[in-house]
Image 1 (cartoon, rainbow, N blue to C red):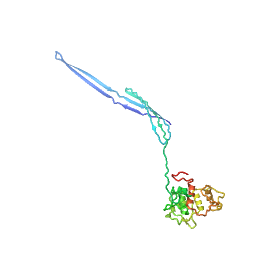
Image 2: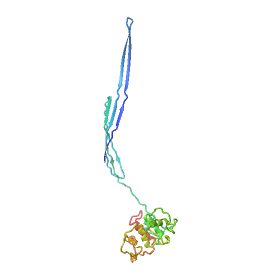
Image 3: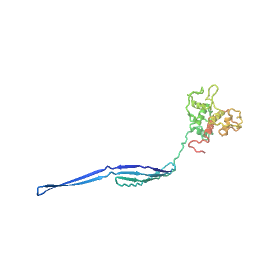
Image 4: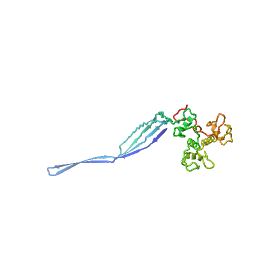
Length: 308
């Protein structure tokens, strides 16, 4: 960047004239023989006059700035400014002085590479019944270390237990980042005081889950593998058309066909060795952790741990 700045400051000074007068008077009296007195007076006048001097100084500095910027984390700038001023005054009745200055600004920047480092805090959360040999270990830790799921007071997670509709609502809502305040009551059996009230309301407000014809949600009921496929697929907005048939027991006419197919094609869910999916089977807490982690956190890496 080259920048030329021109400014013209004007300074005018006027001195007040000073008049100095010195008078010397000398008298001499001479008496003649005729009795006549003769007085001789000699007057000396000294006058000093200081004329009025008006001086106008006009400074015309021309500043040329050459600046080179290289964005870095550390910036060191050295500014050097050299000004040369020449003033000439002639004391006459009117004296005019001209001041000419030239300034050059040259910033110098030194780049120092950033040395900032970031260290993830290892997650020390563990469950006594989910060690590294457990099938669902990485998925349970992936969600637990993010505060999405939790265990029981005795330090267990109980991955083989069936997951309830209320529990699943909480897990999916947390994984999807649904955290807005809620109010009102949509289902007769899920009052604002219910443990899973806010999670169920957030999911229902998005039409991800629904209740029964009698106005209940039945949060204590177990969730099936087919229901989980639908709920998770909708929460993740997996909506593309599907065709074909991946599992022998989930034909295109099945209630959960499109949701199961969308999840299976992404490798989020799998079936059994006989080619079935068994959508009517209850899902366990471990299975739910795996499905949710694969959907919202693919290849999930627990904070502070390296991939193996």
